[in-house]
Image (tube, rainbow, N blue to C red; front, side):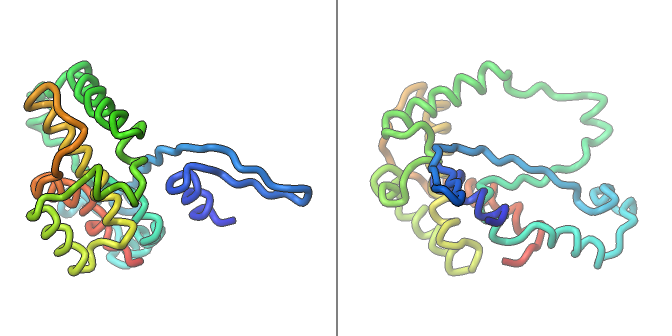
Length: 204
């Protein structure tokens, strides 16, 4: 079994299958996969002129992550170095307690749909639990036609967009229903969060 096969089972099927000569067993498994990488081998690829790597070395570096593996990451967020101004005069963001409350509200909506999180919504139930507005459907279709999304990617974008819609509703209204259309703006944000894969320019 390859590493990708082992990851696919807990990520997509929620199980791990172990086979031995005397039999096999299936264990429940839920995996949250988080990864990080430098922009290049020397790690200085952010600021102009600071990187010591050749273009071919950078290309070899990013090709270490295959397209099929990257396709299983729902969120890919490129980061940049903190500017001197940000280091010396930091701006306070949302408190952890406030963010935790928003996440708890969104998780409550997921539980009302019969899942622990929107990531667990079965593909067969996405149409009912994450219905798309006409604009959202059109935007998603353009992404598919442009070759930006695989079949797996479409479902993943819909689940992320469902969560973005839930977070937006809990922020705006305090309480909301577990149903309701996913709007174009939610799909656009989900696509933008996935677009970091294109920054890596890794082929499938």
